[in-house]
Amino acid sequence: ERHALQQGLRVPGVVEAPENAVAQVHVRAAGFLERVDVRATGVTITRGQTLAWLYSPQIYQTQLELLVVHRGGAGPPMEGVEAAARRSLELLGMATADIDAVLRQDAPMRAVPVRASTGGYVTRLSAVLGQYVTREMALYELTELSRVWIIASLFERDLPLVRRGGAVQFVTPESQAQPMEARVELVEPEVSSVTRTARVRLTVANPQMRLRPGQYGDVRFALPASDALTVPRDAVIDTGRHQYVFVASGEGRFEPRSVRTGALAEERIQILEGLREGERVVVRGAFMMDAESRLQASLAAAPVTAEVAR
Image 1: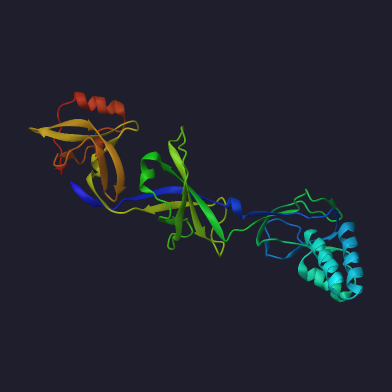
Image 2: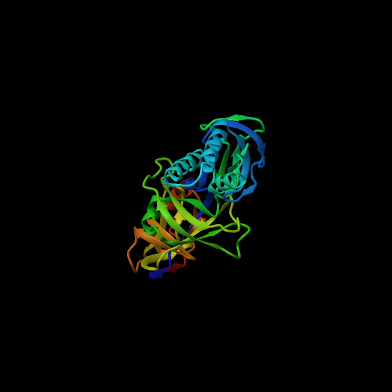
């Protein structure tokens, strides 16, 4: 029979940190770490928070040059020189507020703060007290998780049903009563030659850190209803390699027929190939075989009388 089939897909998904959510903290001038305020991974960091304190001879000398110019007095020529000195300190990594503090106090800062360029969580660190650091060294790695990715794998037959921007629900064992709303951000173009699946990437807001990288759950795709030829799901026998139904051929006889199935909705399954509308199929025939060898044995046996459904 034909039904307005409310299609849906339910597949496993795993939470990942977005690739663009990772930031590294570097110094812009070589020097020594005179103090390390953040010494462990996993801690929460806010944007602008001081992570460590750096003594850099280059930064210290540039501060002195700025103070000499600043003490020289006002006037257009000196203003240009002072602006250039301030710019040099900014390029060396000093924050505007710290430069203002140097001018206000009329004294250089021996050690300048190394601040976080973004908020998030410390996922890696290499800062050690007293360490000599250079511009190439990443002192910290910060990961911002206010939004996360959910990666799901779909079989190639299901890929045409999913569109970018489509609404999705993500459910973890801890959030069964409160599914999280997500959106399809990307359907990757490559299908695995081994699993015959393609990765689908979803994005979901995560302001309260309900989701953490590595966490698993179910991804539920709600798809639009469509008119489809369906049979009761119990009518389909799946051997692992093939799918069959038993079709009524008259006089109480039934013949096996190979079919290709589509979406499953509640107790009915879509038939894409192998059946025509109006044909009758066996509803309770799955018990007859659970492997292809049992299918062959059944074919050799006498015809079976069974309950049928349209």
